[in-house]
Image (cartoon, rainbow, N blue to C red; front, side):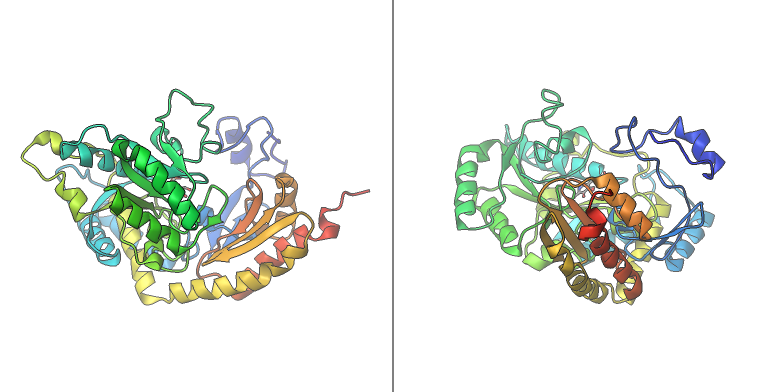
Length: 431
Ligand SMILES: Cc1ncc(COP(=O)(O)O)c(C=O)c1O
């Protein structure tokens, strides 16, 4: 890994020999930038530079950093009670949050199971779906139908539900569950192909799992709401549960509060995380419809959902999530997402003419520039940082998912930096 600079803080040099970074070949990874403060859409570095944050810390900080309403709520909760175990004890922040999420989600999505990360929320959804069948006395339904381009997390059960190439299926072959992988039914032919797959496999399937509207970590691949309506219809036709993983799309990112609303579809299980606490504390939720919960409601102890993370329903995180929901109620986040959408579309438009660019697309507060082939990501990231912008190109894309509260001037800096970094003179080799 690149050595810290002499001007870097002492803690960075001392800790660098001990920290294992995410998604990084440690031998060659760029040294991470030392951050000392955040505020709004800005990241303050140890050397005094300020970066405009283009990705809101992996899509979490939807209200910008350090929102005072969330900070006050967490501080007040910390004084009262940071955490108590959820097994046998109850507290107001979690019970209030569960009721609020159930009220916000459509239909009878009304039973909330709390965890602490997106991957674990998906694990719980998978466990719920499989046990739903077992509790009803139906054997053999232990597989999922999942889609090419999907990403549902990094734990073993979720890796198995990811795109087979991106999800490291080959690397961990034998250690991962083998699911049925299909293409999203984007049109009538796709629907017919999926029906044919389901005809063969439905008897062994517990559920269909999909990231609604946007396959995020798989490359910010968009599909329209009609795909989700097809999935609901096919799941009903074959008697399968339908899981929407809204960990990325939830809380306004794709333009509506939840992507399922855009399609007018009620899935059987929904997973939420990321922006749930406004980017402050780890929390996730798996929300089930009544019929799913009813399959666990029994005199038989073996029908219980046997899951219970130690930090489940953490009171600080639930207080943060309640405060975040207050902000969605009080402030015009969805209008802000619509404004960002229009500005991203206009601001990224010039990138279409940049060398190597294959596509520019926008949905909600998500703007994507896709290249024909993988760019030199490290060089691109360096050029963005030189322009005062934090973004994290991956695969063939560079994307923007800023805080929904970002100022127009900062959004212009983001789109301008991407266009500038891709312009012919910026990417031309130095002679
Ligand atoms: C759709 C989706 N599901 C699950 C996850 C996993 O969440 P976490 O990183 O909190 O485990 C992610 C993370 O990017 C995601 O985008």
